[in-house]
Image 1: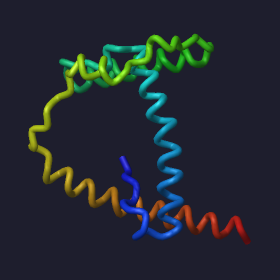
Image 2: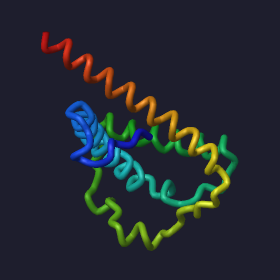
Image 3: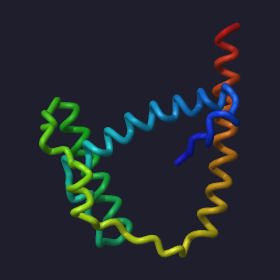
Length: 130
């Protein structure tokens, strides 16, 4: 949910390091979500259920996925979903603009949180050098 710092020339060294670590973590997470959605393709579709039932469904898929990984159940490459297949499904809900004010407030809070996290990472790195 945190975005990287924008630009390359107008950010300092700590912010570049934050971006690097952010990117590194995001790749792992995106790969994991991709594998999860490839194994449980129902996650690619719109969930027509109450929020409680949708959460139960998603948590169930994630739990089963983790069990499969724990027991080294093979993930077959042909299960991977490519961009064309994803576009064919085309079940993404359109943006309706209803939560724009809430999102703007939330985004400002996240940017402040990101700055504090970057500062904390920088301070920890400085302490490790001592």
